[in-house]
Length: 159
View (cartoon, rainbow, N blue to C red):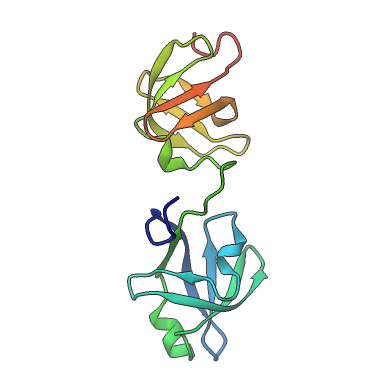
């Protein structure tokens, strides 16, 4: 298993703006993995690594204290900075970047195209195939990253 330093980094959020006078910032977290903001977590940025000191949910975002941001002026300088972190090893998670360029096969072994995009959808993200077919992610049964996606779809989906 690769170490955290060897796993691909993913963009997980962005510093939106300063909050208060003591260097706290508002963070828009783009992942549902809120442990990214656990105290002690290290995130990478264009300015180098930054460590979470404290974080609290605030409306649909988070108020975060980072080790390197000490004042409102510091916080203003970090506005708009994207936060990245290594992928979390979780066998139950389908990572979107693992779907691109993969060939899609149904339960009968019939090839239906290559994944060219993934569209966000409230019910289930949707695989967009080069053949024009759309396949809800809920029908994915197995993945070989960027090579093959197996799906078990209802009859008529590919017609």
